[in-house]
Length: 371
Ligand SMILES: NC(=O)c1ccc[n+]([C@@H]2O[C@H](COP(=O)([O-])OP(=O)(O)OC[C@H]3O[C@@H](n4cnc5c(N)ncnc54)[C@H](O)[C@@H]3O)[C@@H](O)[C@H]2O)c1
Image (cartoon, rainbow, N blue to C red; front, side):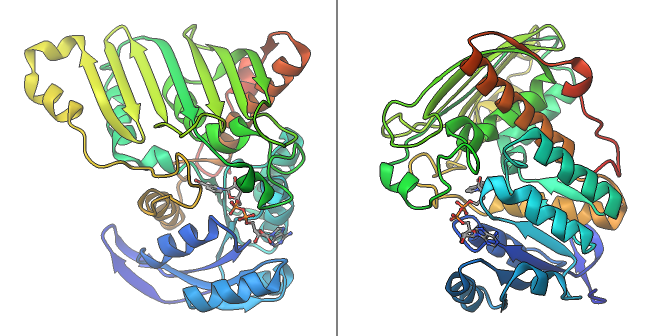
C-alpha cells in the first residue's frame, strides 16, 4: 500500500492508489476525477480487450495490466473503480474485495438483488469499504435540497417525482453487446433513470409499493426504452418515476419534491424553482435558491458528455470517509435500495400488478462500517 501523504483542503490525507477495471466510456471520467483529487493516484487499468487498456493507460499515464488478477496483485492499489458492464459489477467487485481493495462501483450496484447481496456480503467479510456511484447527489442543487430537507423547510413530504426523458440512438445500443440486455444492463430505468430515482429515494425515503408499466417501442433491444411507475413511500407520501431513452432529442433530468412547506424543482442538478411558504418574508433566500447557472449535465443525448466534478466530489468524499473511518455519503445499501425499486418496477410491469416492498427490506442499514 502507498505510504505517501498529501495536504488536501480537508487536512492531511494519505495518498491512495487506484485501479480501474473496464476501460470504456465511464472509466475516463474516473481517471479524470482521480487526477483532480489530492490523495488519489491512478496506478493501473485492465480490460478484457487488452488494446483498450493499453490505449487508456497511455492517455491517463498509468500501467495496463493483462487481467484483473494482475491488477489486484499490485500493492500500490488500495481502491478499485468497477467500470465494467453492470451485470458484471458484483463478480469483479467480489474479487477486488477478496484481495482487500476498497470499492467504487459504478451504478447500478448490479442488475439483480442476489448479485448485489453477494457483493455487499463480500465487502463486509473482507472489511473493505464500498460506495456506489450516484454522482448527482453532489450537484449543487441537490446539496441545497438536502439542506432544505434536513432543516425541515419542506415540512411533511407529500409528493415526489423523478423524470429522465433522454434519447439514445440505435447505434448506442449496438455499440456494446451488453447494452440493453436484461442480463447485463437493463433498460432506460436501470441504466439512465436510476440516477434520479436514487435522488428521489434520498429525498422522500424508502418505497413500499410500486405499480408500473414499461414498453420497448423505438429500439432493437431486449429491455425497455420507456418505463413509468407510481410509488408509495413508507412515510405515506406518493410519487412517480419516469425513464426513457426514446424521447427525442432528450430533455433535462427533473426532480420535483413537494411538502407541506413548499416545493423544490431541480433540472440537471440545479434548483430552477424553490417556493417555500415560510420564504415570503425572506426574499433574499428565495432569490438565491431560484438562481440558475450553467447546466450540470450534457448527457441528455450523448453518454460521453458527462462532467467530471460530481464524480470527483463523490470519490473525494469516499477518500475522506476512509481517512475518517466513517461510512461514505453514498453507501452500498443506498445502491441496493435504488436497484430494489428498479427490480420492483420491472416485476410490476411484467406481472401487471402492484408490488409491495417490506419496509424492513426497503430501509437497509446506513450505519458507518455497514458497507
Ligand atoms: N455514473 C454515470 O453517469 C455512468 C455513465 C456511463 C456508464 N456508467 C456505468 O458504467 C458501467 C460501464 O459503462 P460504459 O458505458 O463505460 O461501458 P463500456 O462498454 O463503454 O465499457 C465497459 C468496458 O468493460 C470492459 N469489460 C467487459 N467485461 C470485462 C471484464 N470481465 N473484465 C474487464 N473488463 C471488462 C469492456 O471491454 C469495456 O471496455 C455501467 O455499469 C454503466 O451503468 C455510469
